[in-house]
Structures are given as C-alpha cells and as structure tokens.
Length: 111
Length: 119
Image 1 (tube, each protein chain N blue to C red):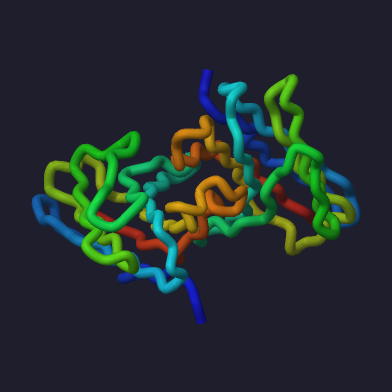
Image 2 (tube, one colour):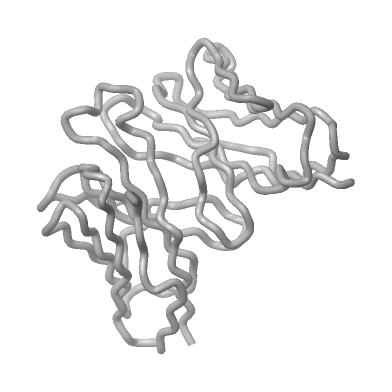
C-alpha cells in the first residue's frame, strides 16, 4: 500500500458543480496534512493546510478523518480556473519534516 | 518581495555531464528540500536540510549531491551517476528549525522549478 494515495482522475465537472477529492494515508500517527494545487508545468502552490476540526476558505473546504485515515477537499461552485491537479501531502510522523505527496487528482471544469 | 527562486528555468545537459541547479530563498527559513517530479507522478524527495551545514538523504538520493553552506542557498548537483535525470526539479523551504512545534513551521513553499533534459 502506498503511503499516500489519491484517485488520479480526471474529474470532469461543469461550471458551478460541487466536487470532492479524497486522499488516504497509511500512518495513523501522521500529524500534518496539506492540499496543494499544481497547474500544468508549474510548481505546486499551497491551497490549504488541513486541521483536525476541518477548515474552510471560500469555496474550498478541507476535512480530516483520522478514524478512516483520509483527508478530503470539497470545491463548491466550480470555476473554469479551478482546473488543475490537486496534490495532497502528509507528514507521516512527528519526528520528521519529510512531506509525502500523493500523485495528484486532476480536475477539469468545463463550460 | 520574499520568495524562493530557482535557476535556470530550463536546462539541457549532455550525458556524462554534471550539472548544478540553484535554489535561493529570502524567507529566513531554516529547512530546505529538493524534489523531483516525473510526468504523471507525485513529488519524490531527493535531499533535505533542516539547518545550515547539515542535510539528509531523501528517498531517491542516488546520483545527486547537495550542500548547505548558507541558510539562503541549497544547490543540487545532478551527477553523471544519475541514470534518468530528465525531470522537473522543485526546491522548497519551510520555517522548520526551532519553531517546528508550531503547526505552520512544517508548511513547505515551492520555487518555480527547473526542467532538466538530458540529450
């Protein structure tokens, strides 16, 4: 089993739709979780850190489910500009700074 | 403006040559990282450094070398021993260091990347 796993997609959704991605992680002791957005041939950019209580930033909501060991990203009212690859990243244990990335989920929003 | 810079943006290398990729940050971050990304794959950690004059191997360090003589700089050398060097190389940094107990200390921010092609 991979340490961090994502469905590669693509997820093709119309503008205005709500879409959700999940990301599973293998180590129950994992402490820090992140969602990054990566546009084609660009660097990943931090979208959100994921907190235990869940957090929201405008149309984006991130949640953590420790019991089932996954994090989720919900995008409401999708825009064409949301088309990108969404990478989840996890620091698997407290005593390391090593961030393990999933392979990413591709989102394509169409008119 | 504060940030992370990488140069060059594109780099072409002949087989058998060593090449050095630059990464500089003016964010006063203690920790710096090098990743490699291949098409359709996630980022894989090559080397990382939590403090000046110290660095550790990541998951795919073979064929690479680094130095951390200054806090701001973390250059990566791709040696001729690296069998498949063509890839997108990303440098990142985080606050790290003595603030690592803070949640935001481990958040990593990326430079724009260098695309290396071996001819």
